[in-house]
Length: 355
Image 1 (cartoon, one colour):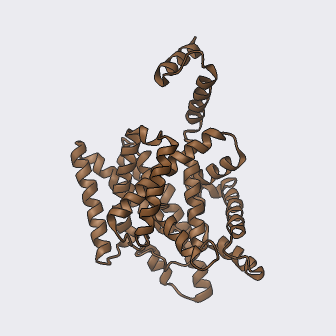
Image 2 (cartoon, rainbow, N blue to C red):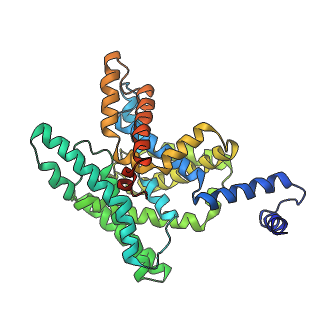
Image 3 (cartoon, helix red, strand yellow):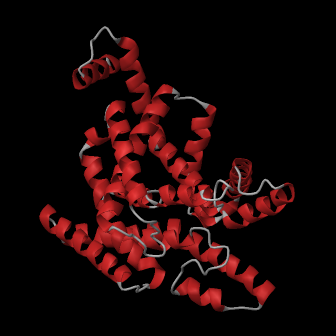
């Protein structure tokens, strides 16, 4: 009786023919998977693509003159902003603010301190230089040794805390929008005057605005249900705009044309989410999509632990002149995945905030 009720409700909601049992069954199975895991596969898939693009950027992907720079320009236009947008998409205000901060500290700050401290120790033992420790506690930019994307952890932590505080202290949507806009303006102004704030706070302030965009997408579900023809047109336009704009790097506070930065980051993320949905719907139980989704689900591993594996793979492949190639990227992903499994299958998973 309960199954029949769900069946008729879904038919009415999706405007489906009651006789189209196969389609309804697929929708129910999809809904059941999401309820069981608490995750949406195509969003994990898109996050996985973002992580792979991050690794490609760190490798100067392509290995050919000009190819690496061009690829990096397109990758940096959206691959880190998309994570802020997705965080905003999943944002829900918790009742207890202290518990919320503790939760975010476990998943973002503990990995940052453990991995950052570990890399700083390795650097000290080999160079007798303590400066990375101070950078870890203050301006955590590219001067951190083997830093990978550690800056993003503190940026996302601060952005999430600020975003939650705004929603906690202000109830009217118009005021929330103004406060988020104010954060974005302050973030861009500090970057305009080349002011670096502790723990990538300048990037976090811009991230607050990106999280607000994610919240809008969560409310406007139709943005994730675009026809493929529409997404191709949007993708072509975004591709042209990215090429027009100068290189972007949130860690360095480089946004070039701010309007183009926002159009490209938001547009590319919406297109990427739609394409990920298409792919996962067409190949729901595909080994490749499952693996990429796993990467997205465990993105913290790849954010914290990518620089040294990439260096190891590059050192090996450089002997046969295959460094910074697709093979290097694949081997780096596999090596980090093995390291990730070691963390996930042992008590070390606590370091990653996974209990």
